[in-house]
Length: 60
Image (cartoon, rainbow, N blue to C red; front, side, top):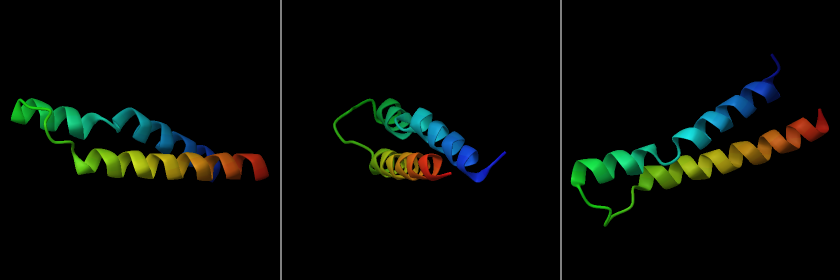
């Protein structure tokens, strides 16, 4: 398995987990008033990985 494939799997996993911190926080607090910073950090990392994956997949 090549690095670019592993990167794609990691990006896909993060896509799946993007909203998990927010769901956990909402359930614990029984309120959706505040949005989790962790959710946005995971989403941002996910987007960066997808861009890198796309560039590497196209050049390799």
